[in-house]
Image (cartoon, rainbow, N blue to C red; front, top):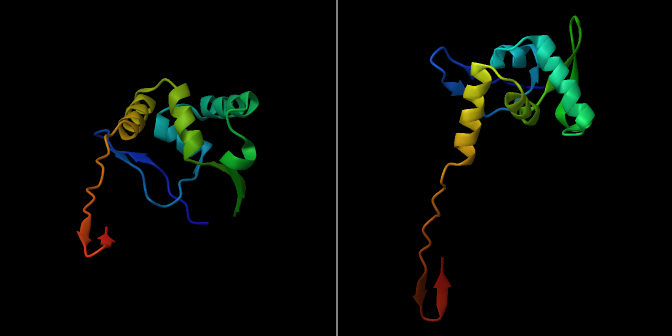
Length: 119
């Protein structure tokens, strides 16, 4: 399985790859600048509250030294809103900014000639 992770540079620039994003709890903790125990506790709370289902938000992969649970973008997004760190705040602002971007409507040209419509 090909997977990528989200990174935040030293100057706060967020890089989200185009490949599927699956990150371990430790990688998410590093991304958000939080302790892995806090991330794990929040993940358990999210599942317990029914905000996400484990079957949809988590994949378990077998690596050389054991099994690792990986979480997708939806879990990472929810965690960024539940954890209060500067890096989590930065990611929240990026997410909100992307959601609130104004999309321009494409221009539609219609040409009519001899009873034929063209788009």
